Amino acid sequence: MSDLADAPIRRSTRLMSKQKGKDEDGESTAKKDIETSNKKRKKAHPSTDDTTAAMTSRLCLPNETLAKLHPQIWNPGYTKLHPPLNQQKARGNWEYDEEQSYSEYVEMANREPNAEGTGRFVLSSSRRTIGLLDLTTQEKKENAKGTAETNNKNRSSDSGHGVLENDRTSRLATFLEAYLGLSVSIRTGRAEGITLRTTKGGKRGCRIDDTKRGLSFPLSLLRESGRGGRCFVDVFSIFDVAVEYLRPTEYSLLVLMDVSLGEWLGGDVEDCNGEIQEVLGRACGDRVAVVNYLTSEANDIELFGTAAHELLHTMGLDHTTHWQCLMNPCYFEGREYMFLAPHNVRKLMNFLGEERNEQFVLKRYRLLMEKWWVVFDKSSPGASDNYNWLKQKVLLMEKFSC
Image 1: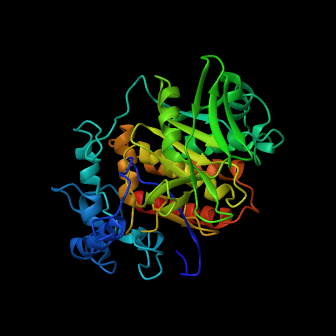
Image 2: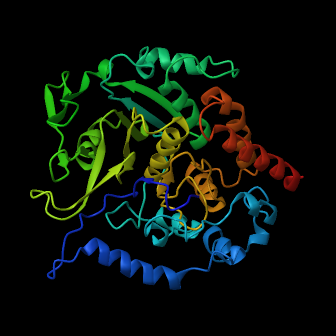
């Protein structure tokens, strides 16, 4: 993944987490939780050297073995394309997060969604689209050209040759459709009368106005202590608003914003003596997610990967901490890994109802290859490396599926 010198940008957890405080001794409970989790994780799973045992525990149902799985799901020949994370180089303590197995994911569908994360939403025949709600405030930018109707029309008429000439949002939608297997509808706040308004770039105030309904939703701000401390919009205050705009036909809603996003990890909010974590994207258990869409610090690979990561959280997928995977909790600048570990591919198949489709995985990878250079420019950092991985994966799958 990365050397310790690289700075990771935090992604999200699937369900809304409880704010961490301090115990009676004044020690951070977040730190204690991490220490407890570390001890638990070190005993709970096989080492990264035991690839077969580790893959079996995550990929198989209780009555299955790797040998029984269809070669599109797993073959020992895929091992080199799904390397374990180097735990010594992984930054911070997130490598000890609880990791969700395929068996656990299947079982979750039998329970209602809840704060503990032991249940999840399921796809339905009437709820099979993803909404992209563009609330970006910048007026003159490549990313906001055209209306939602034009953007959706341009994507449907794309010839498949060369990078899409229209905006970044259309390219994002094209990518997500190929990656997640659901249709994507672009929505603009301007067309729906929904406006993100900021004072001094969000440093003094931020709110979402709905002119059609005559409503105004103030968003909470998080400020770092000290003079010159940075200011972030609290992602959880965005979720409280976004859930109101999730349409009945949409499984998930991804809100695109151009303000710095953060969440409070612990300490006293009023005294600003706690820790604020900046995030590029975040998701919650109500099937809504948000990304800082126009940040200059993220290229297309990083940003589109984060958007897919957050939407997969809304589908019930948790973080992956054993293999390199799009579902890793952090990405390291310039080294985004865009693809899913095998057990997460199988979860996606289960979510989409494609478990009996023996051609699904190969068709999905072929579609991603077809759309890759429609979505990404060859000069974009990481685009060629990820395409080469995709090409190798398809060649191996074709070989082992014969």
